[in-house]
Length: 198
Image (cartoon, rainbow, N blue to C red):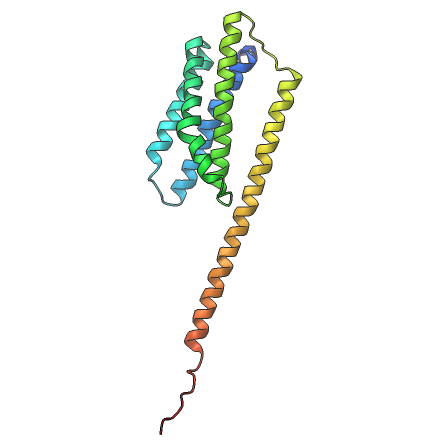
């Protein structure tokens, strides 16, 4: 019990923006795991290496920041966030934003992109506050409200994407059923009478 209490105390003692950077990196890692499971469940293993690379890039800085809290580990976190924002999730979101009817693609890219931005901003602020000797452990009321609003917007967009995805799937199934029905009707309908010549 005392070990758990000590661990919780250590987490609480970590500066707010450092915790925010760790949280953003863990969000990226969890998102990648969910996307990998969704893709593997469909039998597609083409992107497995990509998922592993992103998981390593997000996971290692998160562990180093949590264990060490050093400035260079926060720099690694900022670099990981920039890589996700500029080379991976950002471009992917730009492609999937017009395909909101693909829940996992759109929501995964959206959450990971926002998390990447969060990691970059939080890491930079944590570095600046650390250099000034003014790291804050507690979030301000404005910061808390902002985070809740971002989370609410993400939740709403995810629900909308899920609804559109389900609607598109039902529409596709209806089209398939209609097509199958028309094929059956063509096969079972009697041939049209032909005129006798002469």
